Amino acid sequence: MSPSSDAKTTPKITAQVVAKVAHLARLDLTEAELALMTTQLTGMLDHFGDIDKLDLSAVTPMAQPFPIKNVYREDVVVPGLDRQEVLDNAPAPQDGRFRVPPSNGSES
Image (tube, one colour):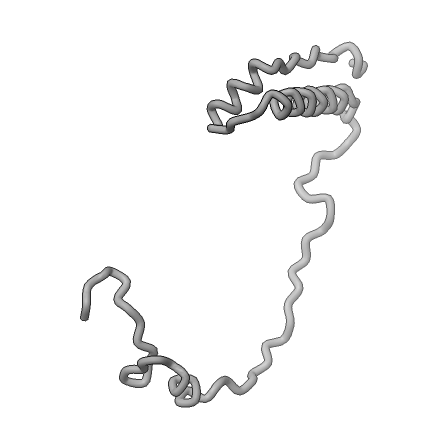
């Protein structure tokens, strides 16, 4: 099957369709923005139509164009901060920990 024999007609995007989608998305477009979006969406659909016309029967489908490789580094033990020195900078430490407001709104 040749690429041109299966070519589909690209649907025309109208300003009314763009306005409807903008309304559904709660976008308030000016007339200039509406015209611009209509032109851009039409161009995108034309480009997708060009891609659809390509004969890709000999191309192997793939999920990732480049091999994925995890990059690991060695774990290195380093000294941490001194607990008391950190708590000394806290506004109101309590029982050797940071005191924070309750997350459920109740006082404990």
